[in-house]
Structure formats: structure tokens, C-alpha cells
Length: 225
Ligand SMILES: C[S@@+](CC[C@H](N)C(=O)[O-])C[C@H]1O[C@@H](n2cnc3c(N)ncnc32)[C@H](O)[C@@H]1O
Image 1 (spheres, rainbow, N blue to C red):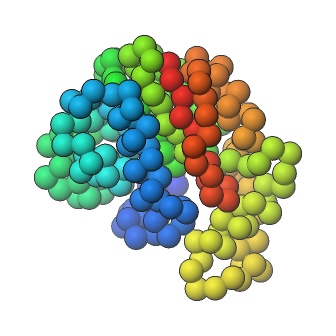
Image 2 (image 1 turned 30 degrees about the vertical axis):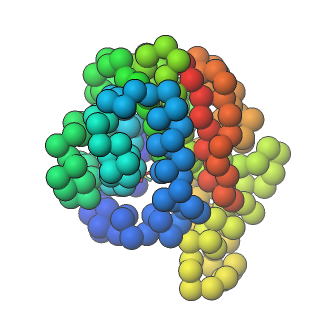
């Protein structure tokens, strides 16, 4: 799957801004941590590549925190890019949004990159290709920040997804309902274990791979070219 299908429905896009912070533990803090991890190595007037930029939520957080950063954001979903334009408002002046996969991004080189809540949609080979294409666009030593669903090593994917689905359901703790949704997610998403995540980042040429964030099935790693 190319990942575009889940974000083709306008109704889903419309709900994205409200529903995503409910689903992802510490969502605003994830954006702040990602911004800080980029800022450690990026200059004050940095060029940042955002892959899977639809919705615009991390772009908005980064642009508000760093008034001199400029961005290129790529995403295959026209609807999610429209939403990003609306979410960004006047901040869109510093963002070049392009419809497509990573290949539609210019060669840069960029001072840093992020790929948030996106790689779990991609089969391992496409992840590897995407990560390699990101790396080709980064300056030497530049950071990459990724975060998405991943399963603890050797553990039961459905049990962990169940906890994430239940977390998103703020009405209570209905494990009969969340279990079904978790089983569907486990079928649909090509999830990797935490060790496999680190391996694919290294295979793509990234080093200093370090876990910086974990909340049920959501995990984030920072690495450098
Ligand atoms: C769950 S949304 C995450 C959006 C945003 N990064 C965030 O954290 O809110 C996943 C996004 O990835 C996009 N996407 C799917 N496959 C992709 C790919 N191969 N390359 C880049 N983006 C992709 C989808 O269109 C969608 O906008």
C-alpha cells in the first residue's frame, strides 16, 4: 500500500485535527521534543524536510517555535495537504507543500527532517526506500526524527494496539470494542518491532539511533546522517 488510501476520505481529514491529539499520548510534547532534537543541530535559520506533512500539525508547532525555520512538506494526500494549509494559516508562507512521496522533495540539502505518524503505513522495503531518500536530502550530521506505531520486541501486537485504541477512547475503558479495532489495525498495518525499527534506520544509513519517546505502541527515534 502506498499509504494514500487511509487519508483519501474528506470526513477523516476534517476530524484529524481534533482526533489525533486524543489518540497519541503526549502529542504536543512529541512535537516539542522533535523540535528540540532538530534544533540541537540545526542553525537558527534552518531548512527542514517534513515527510508525511498532511494535516500540518507538526509544521504548525515547529513554525511557531522557530520563527526563522523554513520547511518543505511532502504528502501524497491532496486532502491532507489542504488541511495543512488551513491549519497553518499565515505560517504557510514559510512552508513549501508538495503533493507526492519523498521523491517530490527537492535535493536540499536540509538541516533536519521528520517523519511523524507515517512510517507504520509503509511495508519494510518502502520504509527503507523512503528513509534512504530522506537521508540523501540531509546535510552530513543532520538529525532525522521519526515516531509511529511499533511493537515491543517479541510481544503481542494486538495486545499493545488494544491499549493504544483504548487510550484514544476517552469515554471509558471498553476493551471488547478496542480489541476488535486493534485486531483490524494489526492486520492492516505492517508494524515492525522496536529492534527492527532501529535496524531499518541503520540500514538506510542513519547512525546514533536513539529512542526518545514511547507511549503504548507509539515510539519515536532520533538519528543522524
Ligand atoms: C497519520 S497522518 C500523519 C500526519 C502528520 N505527520 C502528523 O503527525 O499529524 C499520515 C500521513 O502520511 C501520509 N503518507 C502516507 N504514505 C506516505 C508516504 N509513503 N510518504 C509520505 N507520506 C505518506 C498520509 O497521506 C497522511 O497524511
